[in-house]
Length: 634
Image (cartoon, rainbow, N blue to C red; front, side):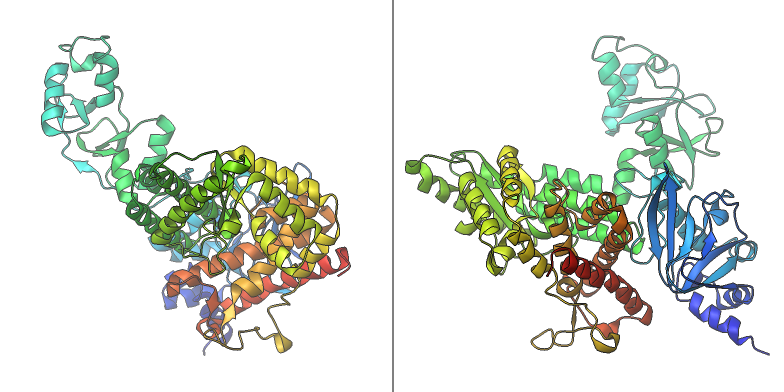
């Protein structure tokens, strides 16, 4: 007799990792032992510091809030939706829980028996890698979860440049060696002839005793500390650091960073007690990763042509795709992509300045606006930028402005060639309205703020998200001071910004149906940018302006800051931050899938679970808009 309940549980589990990596027969066996847990809002699955459970969990319906206490303050970690796995710590490390799991609403949770799961997946490396990676980065959510080192710590290597990569390191076999009696002269000649950067000193049994690199020769021979005829044992670095065949890139990176080295000797058993079989260098790791952030940033820094910058930016897109597929936390992705985008912009301005017929007549600053200004630009989007130049005398003004307009034209042309489309509304520094002197920009902002209308609100809201890229940073700081000083003299401007933030109603219409475009090329498509992301962006901008919060442009970070300032609204602001990250990641995935910006989505292409996740993100939009209506009497 068939177990219909177990089959339904298995069908559900099979939609989500890591269960979709398990055979149907084994999955049904797990499903038969699943513990089905029904929770009311506020019910707890487990508490921080509780002893570990014999189950880990997946959300079947509803949502589970993960939070923890640190220094007597309750901090939100994540909200887990349908298909999200949580409580995995007992599966990886037999330790007490580091956070509390509470039902955010009426929910159903499946408890997966750990002993049975482990026995079935014992030899399944795909499942193991998924769970260990997810545990290390706290990234079980298909759209977004946030890493928090205070909760999970460094279980796996996680450098500032990249997330642990589990592919096997490809090393150089049969490395060049010499014996202990070899003179440094002979070793150096051998290195030069073979064009290699290191040589391994071995004993009679080919066990590695030390290593000599170009750096050793430079620091110990060229400086006169040792004569060129000295034996290699006098200047070699010893003992060597070793690894064995099958070493992963993650482990190799960790060893190199921890010990401050650039070479690992590969031996039969991974120790200095057996014969050397290979050498792994830091360069080998960078080549294997290919498109790591550090490599891309080095390429950008060295680039002297637009074509090379475009190649680097395309590599960044490949990197983005890889990160999204690995479910890396969005905060990590955003920071890396922002650094790459800003580095490209800086280099484009630098190249353009150097190729102008004459140097700039006065100092200036280049600003990124819009999504790049907020450090939220993941995919190629259109340009939004501006230029501020230092005030000059009246007789020099026209020539100065013409110079910077020509410079801006060259910059925007190069950005266009790299892949950043021209702004349809011409909100670029090549437009005279977006290329002004410092005093002109200050006057412009005073007019926008003190005499607001719909156009002023549109233009100023784009500009409020600016990010300094190149030039005289003082000009930007001075403009910021002018803006916040002017805001003190008006309340009307905030009402205009508030109306702008609530102009787009909830993305769901009657009967909980998605509000789609009614005509044009995008008819029947869902505009995730205008209907979901922009209301959150506009609301966050208004809140930080009225609270005079400087230096935080990112939308999610703005909400997180507001949660600190207004504890009574903490839950709302945290849910807005979470929703924005989830929507941003979803948009990026759609853009990569369809090779476009991801702005317009064909709803029929989404699964039921994907639509459910989107709907869950819409609730905070409605709540923050209602809060603004009350706060600003709209």
